[in-house]
Image (tube, rainbow, N blue to C red; front, side):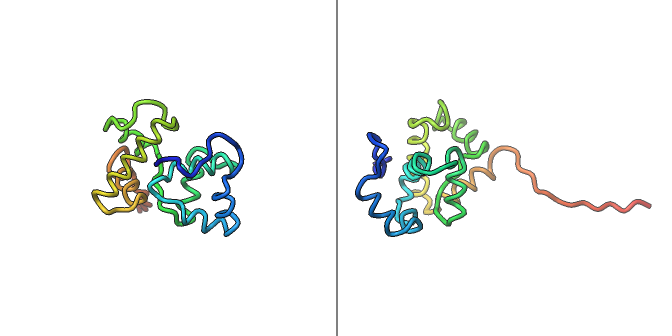
Length: 137
């Protein structure tokens, strides 16, 4: 169930979450199921500082957590495929996006990171930075 790790009714940590945090933040992140990565995003946004938007997902990826990134190319792809039609960060959209990535992952065996990158590279404008040195005669 999506958002199963969050307690939406209070600002307090659940006993299970507090116990996991006491065992270490890294373990807490590692143990969170990737099939509910948006739940982890919501948790970080609510209980962390400056971790809303794409900051939380980028930080998780840097920590080695398997997550997708909602870049403008990924967002455009999801809209073109009619996965989302409302606000990108709405609960409805995030739930639809998570379900879509879960389905892709089950069908392909690829990680969320690989799928996100594949979608981003395959859609939108992509540029390779090349330094060109031209000698003039």
